[in-house]
Image 1 (cartoon, rainbow, N blue to C red):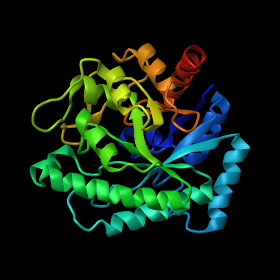
Image 2 (cartoon, rainbow, N blue to C red; image 1 turned 90 degrees about the vertical axis):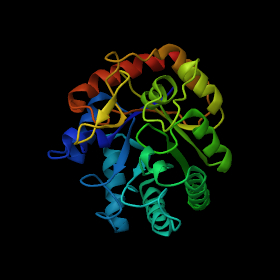
Image 3 (cartoon, helix red, strand yellow; image 1 turned 30 degrees about the vertical axis):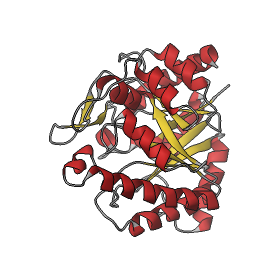
Length: 303
């Protein structure tokens, strides 16, 4: 069986940025819907290292989660204000990552998420090998730090960030061989990277076997899973330009879930969480209940 969580960022960014759902309301709603956990977007207004600097404040969050009968399935660390691809000095990034590792320990979180920070267009300004070396060197150091804190690191590849081709993903994993470092496999990002080839620099690279082939290529290095649908499009930024994968409630997109779920269920990811990701969906609050019912069905059928 799997435990089911949902990313709290769905209720704080994008369409919810100007009117975020308070953390208390999210926890109470998830308790009522029978969720097992919450994946924390570690940035305001939800609990984060800056707003909760004291151990006692963080302990209070753990106690509130326990009252709801929820656990944290992971942390999406707020690293987007740092530089990674476009700098040879990743010291500020590593320091912020370390601060979030301590936050994970205080909240009882066991996995911390990273991404490449800069969009794929950064490779027009930074030579690819230089960019790859910077990213993998930094993440190798982060994996060491995470290991010291007893944490796993999951890298979420997606169209909106550098290194979004299937061969890029494999290369990053090959160059960061740490046992506690792997990929966060999101079924919308997997579709957009392996089937659509969205926002890929240069020649588009897709896989004949689609997501199932991508999962096979990544087998053994997947250490976190997000489930959501895709309609072959990207979410648009404020200027109307493609940003990252659109995350649609199940049934509103084109993803053929059964073979993908079978492949993902066969992976030993090191834990039993499946996380719903409604990032940027305009009616995420309303769609949460239907998504929970669907993933309940996924679990019953495919695990």
